[in-house]
Image 1 (cartoon, one colour):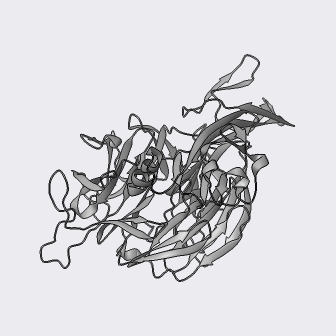
Image 2: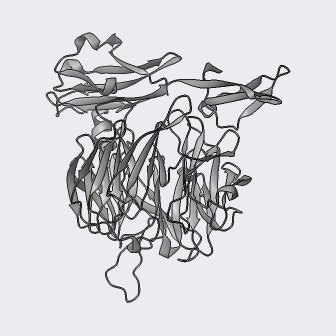
Length: 563
């Protein structure tokens, strides 16, 4: 028997599940979130063939973001106001101008794109000045926000004009590229280099060179590994051979200070929920003395404290990302080199909670991904000596138990930003398998693509024609092509001849020898490096936008949105 129950989630929390059994043997779940959606089966004790399955669906009120909050334009140019909404079920978007519904006024000049996610005005006039309210509504709630548009002559400088043109665009909406040649700040729309910080420039507090000269070495150059954006205020970036990381102030575009860490810092991750930067150092190139450190109060930019964690033999770690619906993450996971297990850790206290064993599956974890829909973790297992790659394992975050293999799916798992799609990239075969995660918490294969792209990195680009949909952009370890796929249909295409990637042997810091970096929730540009240049891709048109030459090994990139 099947029974369906639907509940609304009013508050997003990150605590572990709280189950309670009533006197009538009913199961009670307190503080319901999206991780609880799925099938719950009750068996009669002693009569296993007698059972009833309940399908629990969790509805979530809409949460929205608008972009830009304020903009100033001259008469005759086009303007776009964007609104991203998430909720379960998918919200319906409507717009008001100064409190009045704009639907009757839609015309060639005023159009709605991507199911209302973008309001486009093709040739603005003075009367288009106003407060545009985006309203997102589903059956359990409503959310709204305002995007303001000012139309004015170029000679006039209102406060909105100054904020939008001078502050917002001067340091924000840029790619910050860390290469052999220093730090290059690129404005993707015009393909302009806004600033170049040379290796010989100085750190503000210590007056040391950013990239010190090597005795007897050739031209002065930099070596970077990993970088993170901390709340659009600072960029933290590692210099593995100097055993330190740099802190760059985004507003002033200066390297403010360096911070000594354990030898060979190879990976950074910013935990937004606790304002911490996690630093994985290898100790040496053989990774035989790895350590994991945590920098607290990272967004303060000064007087930070480094916490040395007690975890030993760390091969890698995984901290789930946040999104509009899930805005706080409490737990992360650590992998050991030689153990068939993951270790669950409390991010706030930096302590070990429990060990989840994979011994029954002979799986040593290589990477993880997470969806808040049903609360599933997907674990990629390292290839053993057998010819066939081991299938992914699924962990249920409610019970911390291993559900079992993810069918026959293998490869590196990637979850779309809304949690609704799992893309698994098999590096050896070039296969891309895409599974949908339904709002009932079910996992269903929707298509299996055979490609010749041995994926190095993969990211998701929001669609500009269809609301709540994405494109996949994937780079190759070896080839010059970039693959893009419409996620909902599997329609596939290729951008050709983006020059040779950095060779894997020349990029020891991760398996991503050719990264693909997107420009956030509302951005339309992506960037990917070749050996000696960078390519900017227009995600709205799915075309190559430009090449920026003379940037060597620019494989460490950070996107900075509006500041």
